[in-house]
Length: 311
Image 1 (tube, rainbow, N blue to C red):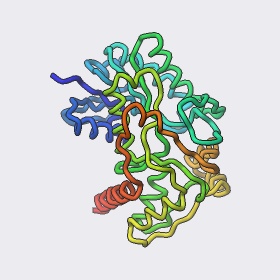
Image 2: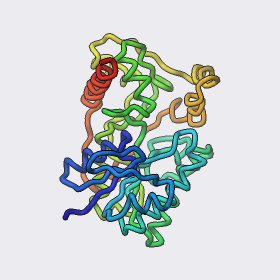
Image 3: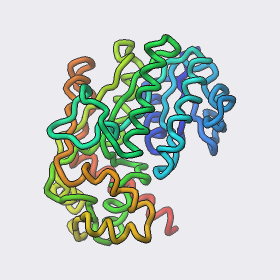
Image 4: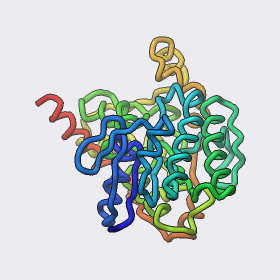
């Protein structure tokens, strides 16, 4: 029997993309979430040690794609990581963390993996603590572990992302597509299937262990350029606009999700650019989908989803 790859958060956007990539590469999989179903699904509450151990049982590699609600990262993410580590350790499995860039805080120039974890805001500090818990477990020999870091992502299934509802769902519905942040600052955006491919490569390669990697990604774009690609993909029938700091403050008075964005607005008012050269040097170029192609596929997914919703 082939080694088992377990995806925690298997019904989410990142977890679902990782499952698709694992299946495409011929791996045996288990999809874990509270609402999992199907022959490869397992329902478990990985916020408890008992649930995490059950979820990871028999695994060779565990992909941690689950996370608490955005507003509860600071309160819940470190403890969730501790239970996931306990599950991976009990199984003797390698852990691959689907990570992001929050731990770096404000930056001046392209981001490399050598940057200090200098964030001072609660979400950034929580992500820094999560990273250190994982790296400490690896150093102490409790688990083999690695982390793959990506920027804001978009792609098929990407509903719970800052680029999904405000850009793609709006454009498909004929509403104004709004870029959250400065329209003219370069910003790295990751395509979801490419994120999944990078994470699975980290799971397959032992030389990935013991550190974080920036996953391979297409060149940064400005919000204006990205929205232009979206407008072209929907046939030029949508208006585009920015969603600036002033609007964020006003809407945040009544919308708690938008209010949370103010904590990390430095990701949106200046260049936010990822250097992925370390991954490319170690593992080759990886899968990097041109943004025009990724945007077109994402628009088609949102169109299909909209048709299914309206019947």
